[in-house]
Length: 239
Image 1: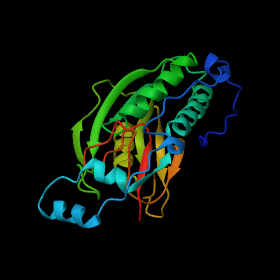
Image 2 (image 1 turned 45 degrees about the horizontal axis):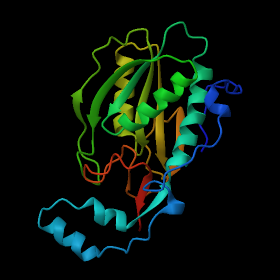
Image 3 (image 1 turned 180 degrees about the vertical axis):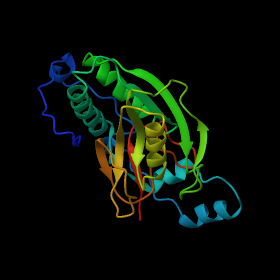
Image 4 (image 1 turned 60 degrees about the vertical axis):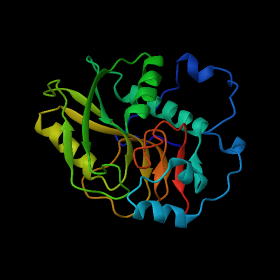
């Protein structure tokens, strides 16, 4: 997992204690592919029947028909790398950047990234917004604004923090709104970027942790019909 830094600044060796800490023992469980219990595949017909009857698909069925794409350790490493890159880019700023979490998906990632930044001595000012196109389904729908930041953005350096960059409609709309509020600089940090050719023009991630395939992904903030956001790994439904 590599954090991309299009701003052209070099990277310094991390000076925080986390960069030199010994490997910590890990508890077995969800989020670690090498210790995952074998789970029989679910019957797709049952899923279809539930959807046809208007019932919400069950997370436990999705987990049976999914695979771990990035486990907890890989995600943690990616966030550490991103934090190093962000600290380098904002090292000379006199004022902490406005760290805006895109709810709900960005919540888990934003928390972990903010801790990693704090571990490196970088402060941020927290804000949040809620703008979504997904509304609990597997395909996009009309953009809906539910909450906009209360903190004035004029003259501020802004980091938008979200779970995933997919087609980019939501993040582009949010980025343009921030620019309309006269933010001095707007950058995007996402945990994951989906690999496909449907990305709209005008939006890209300045910092990206991992790539995910062009499939339905969930976990670590991303939802499966509003379930599973707190899974400590990124899962993808099998084709």
